[in-house]
Image 1 (cartoon, rainbow, N blue to C red):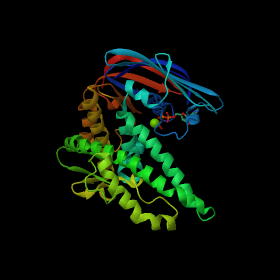
Image 2: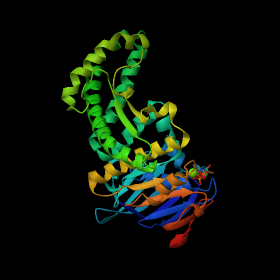
Image 3: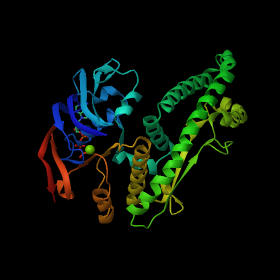
Image 4: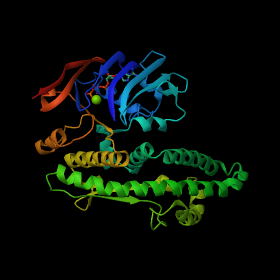
Length: 374
Ligand code: ATP
Ligand code: MG
């Protein structure tokens, strides 16, 4: 998959920008706060109508303006596509492919898949389970539309059940519907667990060899999917997971009523990351944290490739800081295949063939097309 060009109107700090990219490595360089991450964010948005850092679409629209527009020419499966996103304050976003309005964001992922690494991804290793669940969800949503639909349904059911648990003492009749919500959450949750378990299985094959290579053969990364305790084989078909999920809910019913929160279900899942047998969350150094987070992302990229036969577009935001020379060399020279966008403050970090783009105050200037920089 290749982003051949992009056009932005009033997206973040870009007034109007049109830029064409190389199908290989694109280096986006410039001083702080000029728009490098914003450019990567715009590309990432076109793969699922989600930003990695904005909670609401309105944050993407330029301050003081009502509309924003992103348009890209893409190449996928040897065909050319035009995809567009129209954002407007107070209105639902509109997505188009080849001029035809799309019903769901996951239709965008058919045409463009991206894997993004950004400084915030260090939370994947360092912080609580929320970041790791979001990582799993983002990846699997791009791969499997059925998962995206199940996740949206699960979130809806979760919110509804939370309201029941919160309000039942003022309105006891709400409890009449609890069994029904429990059943539907268990059915939908079983789908999530099944897909997550399969994804983690593939990630266990793809990410550790990358981490090992990245660390010069010194470190072993291991991953473990943690889900509802009563489930012994999370890879089993969803219908076989259902009894264990219902049993877990049943045993937590009293505790849920007392705590007034949903305590049972895959919204508590985690992905345990260990380096050399130690939990990375507690023990990894800054460089190891970055290496492990990046290995998870590059492992995901390989899964996408194995799945579709095409490399997803790799977006690397500020990846080089905190890495020693050997690890920087891995990033700059060992990632092969597919289109890559990489941001940095100083183009001197790069050697080899790459297309340079200088970003300054929301304007992108191609630095002389494809060139060899040192
Ligand atoms: P750094 O090297 O520090 O990471 P950067 O080049 O990646 O910098 P960006 O994160 O792309 O910088 O942000 C560039 C500028 O865009 C920032 O000054 C930010 O305040 C501004 N900005 C963010 N959102 C909007 C918006 N909705 N409207 C206008 N400007 C915005
Ligand atoms: Mg940035």
